[in-house]
Image (cartoon, rainbow, N blue to C red; front, side):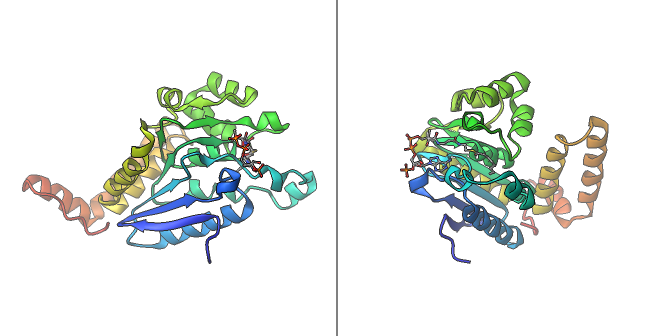
Length: 257
Ligand code: CO8
């Protein structure tokens, strides 16, 4: 599949996807989502890749779903085709995904960033769910994920008024992990991804699964799930190597990475 709306590269063990619809502020249309799905499927299946970074341009991570594509959609079309049901592919990625966000992350763009495991933002990043201004509401997890990340009052205010959040506010409210100057942000996200990709992949994937489980279940179930995964890692050669390397005061040479 030739990519027309995204640019796909590998940087060592990191897969990099750059959303690329410069004339439309990286608005997410069906073709772009199909291409993103394909790129993620390829990286998930590629043994040499340990982590993925999704980024946009300096102006826009993504300004939302493509309003021009959606505007004439009828209820029957949307319901029959289960519109946007496949758009959460990012959330189902088995390897970790980092969103490297500069500029606007609005509507579906904010939802896409929130489907990622870590959000690293540039100082000019702006997050928002402006769907209410278009006579609709978030449709790809915005009301659910934003509420879990920033709490009810702030999520409610953002979804009900369309107010955008600055990078600084997003960091202080727990939506993003770090804020960096624009010219350092992508390099930092790639370095973070490279660091993750250098660890034992089964341990990385299980850690991701366990943290995500915290959003879906009770504390008792979550800790039981975590313990089962923890036990299973003692069946890997990387656990032997990681702990032996510590005892021998050397760097571990993980096999599964
Ligand atoms: N869809 C289609 N085109 C867009 C979009 C969009 N979301 N955003 C910007 N564009 C286009 C503009 O129409 C314009 O095109 P043209 O040059 O042909 O007129 C071009 O990008 C540049 O945009 P602006 O001239 O408006 O640039 P500004 O710098 O003045 O403003 C903004 C930038 C603030 C980002 C502004 O463009 C804007 O408000 N965009 C719309 C934001 C929005 O409302 N997003 C929510 C969309 S609804 C949604 O996302 C529902 C989610 C459903 C699930 C999605 C699953 C992933």
